[in-house]
Amino acid sequence: NAGVTQTPKFRVLKTGQSMTLLCAQDMNHEYMYWYRQDPGMGLRLIHYSVGEGTTAKGEVPDGYNVSRLKKQNFLLGLESAAPSQTSVYFCASRPGTGGYNSPLHFGNGTRLTVT
Amino acid sequence: GEDVEQSLFLSVREGDSSVINCTYTDSSSTYLYWYKQEPGAGLQLLTYIFSNMDMKQDQRLTVLLNKKDKHLSLRIADTQTGDSAIYFCALLTGGGNKLTFGTGTQLKVEL
Image (tube, rainbow over all chains, first blue to last red; front, side, top):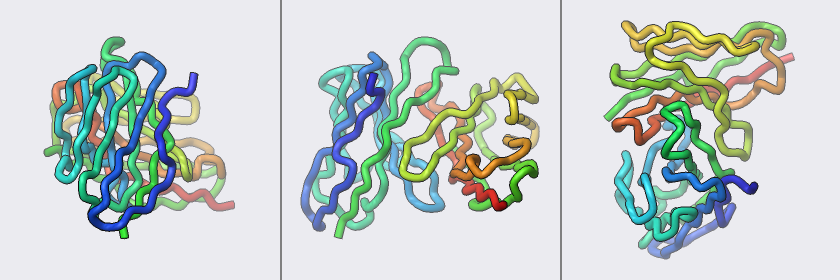
């Protein structure tokens, strides 16, 4: 099993450009998440999904959109990138069942720089 | 929203014990977690504790929970250079749908 796979691993964008980050999981997990990690701020939740076809806003959703058309994929879109979106983005997933002690499984991150 | 705070840095000598602290504001969290992040990688779950417990021990790791003071700690016994990483506490929030992470503590183990 590959677990949680994020593509791309690195990307440099110019202000105003758009892009989509892809997260794929092969564990049949119900819940999927997008976080951003910034120095001294920990991980902040951008958007999440509790099942195929559903999405919800997290702590810092502005400037991002998401889609969960297939259970195994969770896409994060930046319509018009800004330098403030320079960050490391992590996708995570976890089962919907198994109780609250089911841990998050993380991808290895996407490092995005917006110039 | 939920505030989860940690010290940014901790430096210890190899063989000593490390104690990483976490304070939070939401008393309704049912599960509290510790994650480890090594350079260039995602986060991996180290251990977790249910809110009705005061302590949990797992080999070199001891988790202490003080619900009254809203304080969580992770003690690593006999700290090794391989323990150098960023450690995050996290709380289950949002009715069990979300994990809220702390700011992370970078642990440096010196010889």
